[in-house]
Amino acid sequence: MSAGIVLAGGGTAGHTSPLIATAERLRALRPDVTLTSVGTPKGLESRVIPQAGLPLEMIPPVPMPRRPTPELLAVPVRLTGAVRQARTILKNAGADVVVGFGGYVALPVYLAARTMGIPVVLHEQNAVPGLANKVAARFATRVTVTFPDTDLARAERVGLPVRGAILDLDPQALRPAARAAFGLPDDGPVLLVSGGSQGARSLNVATVDALDRLLAAGVSVLHVLGAAHPADDMVPRESAGAVYRPVSYVDGMENAYAAADVMLGRAGAGTVTETAIVGLPTIFVPLPHGNGEQAKNGRFLVEAGAAVQIFDADLDADTLVRQVIALVENPDRLAQMSQTARGLVPCDAADSLARIVLELVDART
Image (tube, rainbow, N blue to C red):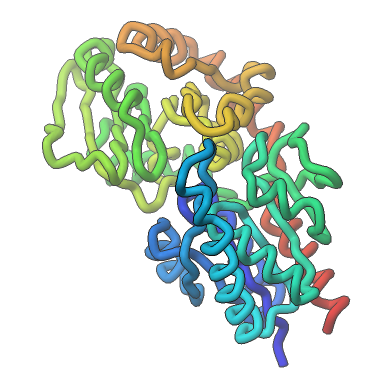
């Protein structure tokens, strides 16, 4: 009978992308392993997990209110029901190990595994841990993290698992084809703007407001507005040999990275890690909400001179134009940023995490 591994995580690409990357590596190392993912119907996982060829089981989300509200009173009942459903999934999957990546779905699965004596391996993507992983770190068998100085007991830094397409990317070799695919010029600097899978209003507004000046300076813009901000009303433009290409979503971000010289983006764990691995100089604008994790995610790159950070409240068209022009007019600085970034992040995180999981599987089978 093959080993059973259950992977839990969802809500955003920050949780689903490392889950998929780890699953890819587990399959490569142990083709006979049985993988089952657990998500919620409301998360991005309902689309991307099946697309990745992984079986997906659903449990209801159990959001934890940040402040005392009437919703808080319903949490114990909801959590109990979700744990009960998670136990059934673990039993049916023949789970030998649970691997969790955080998000609303993870806590019920962690708690179900604990009651069943199943080892838990958790991975925390952000520099500031989320609630589910804070709780599970107290009883997890192994605790792995992406960034240095993440405040979790017994944390082992493995980095962030990313897809093979990112690890294997040769930006210079792919650049001509990537630019052609997006309708971008063969020559001249390209700014990639992306606020993540759902987009970011402040980044979008600053970009549109700065557009005339960027194009006049010869900077083309590949603008990924995000699924929550459809590109239907945005019109491609051209000026001074530079072009503006708005799109709602990019499935293969490696192509967008290869097309660009500089990126403007949030500082989610995926963006920080992927841009560092491919050596794309980035202007980070941390999300001003949540636990403040994004402001800390990219700090090590900023402090090393491998990235630039602008706080959301300070982002406007003037600031954006000034920062972008200063970078694209200094190719030596861009080259140094690229080289420095590549040396600051582990590139074998998916392999490291997969081997940790398989060690525990082998100990139980």
